[in-house]
Image (cartoon, rainbow, N blue to C red; front, side, top):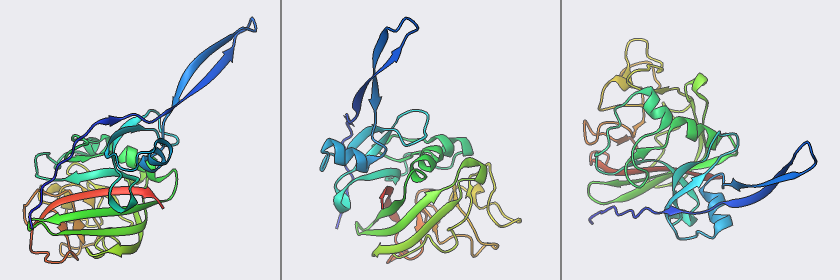
Amino acid sequence: MSFQLGIVSILLLCWRIDFVYSENVDSSYIFYQRPVYPRDCKEARDSCNMQSSNGVIMIKPDGYHEPFEVYCDHEVDSGGWTVFQRRVDGSVNFFVDWEDYKNGFGPLNHEHWLGNEKIFSLTNQRRYALRIDFVNSLGDPYFAKYDFFSIDNEINNYRLTVEGYSDGDAGDSLTGYNNNENFSTRDRDNDDDPNYHYALNDDNSAWWYGGNDYYNYADSVLNGGYHQRNKPFWETLPHSYVNIQYTEMKIRPA
Protein backbone atom coordinates (compact mmCIF):
# COMPACT_ATOMS: atom_id res chain seq x y z
CA MET A 1 0.00 0.00 0.00
CA SER A 2 1.46 3.37 -0.94
CA PHE A 3 0.76 6.68 0.71
CA GLN A 4 0.74 10.10 -0.87
CA LEU A 5 -0.29 13.30 0.85
CA GLY A 6 -1.98 15.92 -1.26
CA ILE A 7 -3.38 19.02 0.39
CA VAL A 8 -4.89 21.80 -1.65
CA SER A 9 -5.17 24.83 0.56
CA ILE A 10 -7.52 27.72 -0.03
CA LEU A 11 -8.62 30.39 2.40
CA LEU A 12 -12.23 29.55 3.11
CA LEU A 13 -14.30 32.55 4.10
CA CYS A 14 -16.51 32.08 7.13
CA TRP A 15 -17.49 34.96 9.35
CA ARG A 16 -20.49 37.05 10.26
CA ILE A 17 -20.72 40.81 9.95
CA ASP A 18 -22.38 42.56 12.89
CA PHE A 19 -23.52 46.13 12.41
CA VAL A 20 -22.85 48.04 15.60
CA TYR A 21 -23.01 51.69 16.51
CA SER A 22 -21.70 54.20 18.99
CA GLU A 23 -23.38 57.38 20.14
CA ASN A 24 -21.58 60.71 19.88
CA VAL A 25 -21.87 63.54 22.40
CA ASP A 26 -24.27 65.33 20.03
CA SER A 27 -26.59 62.28 20.06
CA SER A 28 -25.63 61.33 16.50
CA TYR A 29 -24.62 57.74 15.75
CA ILE A 30 -21.67 56.19 13.96
CA PHE A 31 -22.40 52.81 12.41
CA TYR A 32 -19.61 50.39 11.58
CA GLN A 33 -19.11 46.75 10.71
CA ARG A 34 -17.53 44.22 13.06
CA PRO A 35 -16.59 40.76 11.74
CA VAL A 36 -17.45 37.86 14.05
CA TYR A 37 -15.31 34.78 13.39
CA PRO A 38 -16.01 31.15 14.30
CA ARG A 39 -14.20 29.92 17.41
CA ASP A 40 -12.93 26.72 15.79
CA CYS A 41 -13.37 24.51 12.72
CA LYS A 42 -16.40 22.73 14.18
CA GLU A 43 -18.24 26.02 14.60
CA ALA A 44 -17.19 27.03 11.08
CA ARG A 45 -18.50 23.76 9.66
CA ASP A 46 -21.83 24.08 11.43
CA SER A 47 -22.39 27.75 10.62
CA CYS A 48 -20.90 27.93 7.13
CA ASN A 49 -21.93 24.56 5.68
CA MET A 50 -18.35 23.36 5.15
CA GLN A 51 -19.07 19.67 5.47
CA SER A 52 -16.53 18.59 2.84
CA SER A 53 -14.26 21.60 2.29
CA ASN A 54 -10.84 21.09 3.84
CA GLY A 55 -8.70 24.19 3.95
CA VAL A 56 -7.51 27.23 5.83
CA ILE A 57 -9.97 29.54 7.58
CA MET A 58 -9.84 32.43 10.02
CA ILE A 59 -11.01 31.75 13.58
CA LYS A 60 -11.00 33.68 16.84
CA PRO A 61 -11.25 31.70 20.07
CA ASP A 62 -12.82 33.32 23.11
CA GLY A 63 -10.41 35.71 24.75
CA TYR A 64 -7.75 35.64 22.05
CA HIS A 65 -6.63 39.12 20.99
CA GLU A 66 -6.99 38.69 17.22
CA PRO A 67 -8.26 36.20 14.61
CA PHE A 68 -5.77 33.75 13.10
CA GLU A 69 -5.65 31.09 10.41
CA VAL A 70 -5.99 27.35 11.01
CA TYR A 71 -6.29 24.30 8.79
CA CYS A 72 -9.63 22.46 9.05
CA ASP A 73 -10.17 18.77 8.37
CA HIS A 74 -13.81 18.21 7.44
CA GLU A 75 -13.36 14.72 5.97
CA VAL A 76 -12.07 12.46 8.75
CA ASP A 77 -14.47 11.16 11.41
CA SER A 78 -17.38 13.49 10.51
CA GLY A 79 -15.10 16.55 10.23
CA GLY A 80 -14.93 19.70 12.31
CA TRP A 81 -11.29 19.12 13.33
CA THR A 82 -8.87 22.00 13.96
CA VAL A 83 -5.35 20.84 13.06
CA PHE A 84 -2.45 21.99 15.24
CA GLN A 85 0.39 19.68 14.17
CA ARG A 86 1.37 17.90 10.97
CA ARG A 87 4.49 15.99 9.88
CA VAL A 88 4.78 14.84 6.29
CA ASP A 89 8.30 14.70 4.90
CA GLY A 90 10.72 16.44 7.25
CA SER A 91 10.87 19.59 5.13
CA VAL A 92 10.15 21.86 8.13
CA ASN A 93 12.61 22.02 11.01
CA PHE A 94 10.88 21.16 14.31
CA PHE A 95 14.10 21.47 16.34
CA VAL A 96 13.48 25.12 17.23
CA ASP A 97 13.18 27.36 20.29
CA TRP A 98 10.49 28.09 22.87
CA GLU A 99 9.34 31.27 21.10
CA ASP A 100 8.89 29.38 17.83
CA TYR A 101 6.65 26.81 19.48
CA LYS A 102 4.86 29.57 21.37
CA ASN A 103 3.97 31.48 18.20
CA GLY A 104 3.82 28.64 15.66
CA PHE A 105 5.74 27.86 12.49
CA GLY A 106 5.44 26.15 9.12
CA PRO A 107 2.80 26.41 6.36
CA LEU A 108 -0.66 25.39 7.54
CA ASN A 109 -1.28 23.29 4.43
CA HIS A 110 1.89 21.26 5.03
CA GLU A 111 4.19 20.63 8.00
CA HIS A 112 3.48 22.97 10.89
CA TRP A 113 2.96 23.62 14.58
CA LEU A 114 0.04 26.00 15.17
CA GLY A 115 1.55 27.66 18.25
CA ASN A 116 1.13 26.97 21.95
CA GLU A 117 -0.56 30.30 22.66
CA LYS A 118 -3.21 29.50 20.07
CA ILE A 119 -3.58 25.89 21.24
CA PHE A 120 -3.98 27.12 24.82
CA SER A 121 -6.62 29.64 23.76
CA LEU A 122 -8.52 27.00 21.81
CA THR A 123 -8.48 24.26 24.43
CA ASN A 124 -9.47 26.52 27.32
CA GLN A 125 -12.64 27.95 25.80
CA ARG A 126 -14.50 24.62 25.91
CA ARG A 127 -13.91 20.89 26.26
CA TYR A 128 -12.05 19.32 23.31
CA ALA A 129 -11.37 15.81 22.08
CA LEU A 130 -8.04 14.94 20.45
CA ARG A 131 -7.44 12.78 17.39
CA ILE A 132 -4.00 11.81 16.09
CA ASP A 133 -3.64 10.22 12.66
CA PHE A 134 -0.56 8.28 11.61
CA VAL A 135 0.70 6.68 8.42
CA ASN A 136 3.86 4.56 8.55
CA SER A 137 6.42 4.24 5.77
CA LEU A 138 4.61 1.14 4.47
CA GLY A 139 1.48 3.23 3.92
CA ASP A 140 -0.48 1.70 6.81
CA PRO A 141 -2.87 4.19 8.50
CA TYR A 142 -3.60 4.24 12.24
CA PHE A 143 -5.25 6.64 14.67
CA ALA A 144 -5.67 7.37 18.37
CA LYS A 145 -8.53 9.32 19.89
CA TYR A 146 -8.93 10.89 23.35
CA ASP A 147 -12.00 12.32 25.06
CA PHE A 148 -10.21 15.32 26.55
CA PHE A 149 -7.15 17.39 25.61
CA SER A 150 -5.91 20.77 26.82
CA ILE A 151 -2.72 22.64 27.60
CA ASP A 152 -2.11 25.24 30.29
CA ASN A 153 -0.75 28.76 29.78
CA GLU A 154 2.87 29.81 29.34
CA ILE A 155 3.33 30.60 33.04
CA ASN A 156 2.64 26.91 33.69
CA ASN A 157 4.83 25.79 30.78
CA TYR A 158 1.91 24.72 28.56
CA ARG A 159 1.37 21.70 30.80
CA LEU A 160 -0.47 18.85 29.08
CA THR A 161 -3.73 17.29 30.25
CA VAL A 162 -5.08 14.40 28.20
CA GLU A 163 -7.66 11.83 29.31
CA GLY A 164 -9.88 9.05 28.08
CA TYR A 165 -8.26 7.03 25.30
CA SER A 166 -11.50 6.07 23.59
CA ASP A 167 -10.88 4.76 20.09
CA GLY A 168 -8.27 3.84 17.54
CA ASP A 169 -5.81 1.14 16.53
CA ALA A 170 -2.63 3.09 17.35
CA GLY A 171 -2.89 2.42 21.08
CA ASP A 172 -2.41 4.88 23.93
CA SER A 173 1.05 6.45 24.13
CA LEU A 174 0.08 9.80 25.63
CA THR A 175 -1.57 9.31 29.04
CA GLY A 176 1.45 7.58 30.59
CA TYR A 177 4.76 9.43 30.92
CA ASN A 178 3.60 12.46 28.90
CA ASN A 179 0.36 13.39 30.66
CA ASN A 180 0.46 16.20 33.24
CA GLU A 181 3.95 17.15 32.07
CA ASN A 182 5.40 20.50 31.08
CA PHE A 183 6.37 21.41 27.53
CA SER A 184 10.12 21.52 26.88
CA THR A 185 12.14 22.88 23.97
CA ARG A 186 15.85 22.87 23.18
CA ASP A 187 16.30 26.19 25.01
CA ARG A 188 13.83 25.56 27.86
CA ASP A 189 14.26 22.47 30.06
CA ASN A 190 10.99 21.77 31.91
CA ASP A 191 11.10 17.97 32.21
CA ASP A 192 11.25 16.05 35.51
CA ASP A 193 14.82 14.78 35.15
CA PRO A 194 17.36 17.10 36.84
CA ASN A 195 20.21 15.29 35.10
CA TYR A 196 19.09 15.33 31.50
CA HIS A 197 17.49 17.75 29.03
CA TYR A 198 15.51 15.51 26.68
CA ALA A 199 14.41 18.24 24.26
CA LEU A 200 18.02 19.26 23.68
CA ASN A 201 18.56 16.38 21.24
CA ASP A 202 17.30 17.06 17.72
CA ASP A 203 16.00 13.48 17.46
CA ASN A 204 13.61 14.31 20.32
CA SER A 205 12.95 18.05 19.93
CA ALA A 206 10.12 19.83 21.78
CA TRP A 207 7.45 17.76 23.58
CA TRP A 208 5.82 17.02 26.92
CA TYR A 209 8.54 14.98 28.64
CA GLY A 210 8.12 13.25 31.97
CA GLY A 211 9.82 10.46 33.86
CA ASN A 212 12.86 10.78 36.05
CA ASP A 213 15.37 8.63 34.21
CA TYR A 214 16.67 8.20 30.67
CA TYR A 215 14.60 5.08 29.94
CA ASN A 216 11.22 6.36 31.16
CA TYR A 217 10.77 9.89 29.86
CA ALA A 218 8.15 9.51 27.13
CA ASP A 219 5.82 7.04 25.44
CA SER A 220 5.60 9.33 22.43
CA VAL A 221 7.68 11.98 20.66
CA LEU A 222 5.96 13.37 17.57
CA ASN A 223 8.07 16.50 17.00
CA GLY A 224 11.42 14.72 16.90
CA GLY A 225 13.93 14.61 14.06
CA TYR A 226 12.25 13.14 11.00
CA HIS A 227 13.38 9.49 10.70
CA GLN A 228 16.16 9.95 13.25
CA ARG A 229 16.43 7.11 15.78
CA ASN A 230 12.92 5.89 15.07
CA LYS A 231 11.37 9.37 15.37
CA PRO A 232 8.60 10.45 15.23
CA PHE A 233 7.78 7.83 17.86
CA TRP A 234 4.55 6.32 19.25
CA GLU A 235 5.34 3.33 21.44
CA THR A 236 2.06 1.42 21.08
CA LEU A 237 1.84 1.73 17.30
CA PRO A 238 1.68 -1.69 15.56
CA HIS A 239 4.97 -2.48 13.83
CA SER A 240 6.65 0.26 15.86
CA TYR A 241 9.97 -0.63 14.21
CA VAL A 242 8.62 0.87 10.96
CA ASN A 243 9.19 4.61 10.60
CA ILE A 244 6.23 6.95 10.95
CA GLN A 245 5.80 8.86 7.70
CA TYR A 246 2.90 11.12 8.64
CA THR A 247 1.29 12.52 11.78
CA GLU A 248 -1.58 14.94 12.22
CA MET A 249 -2.83 16.16 15.60
CA LYS A 250 -6.24 17.85 15.71
CA ILE A 251 -8.99 18.81 18.13
CA ARG A 252 -12.77 19.10 18.05
CA PRO A 253 -15.33 20.05 20.71
CA ALA A 254 -16.15 16.95 22.72
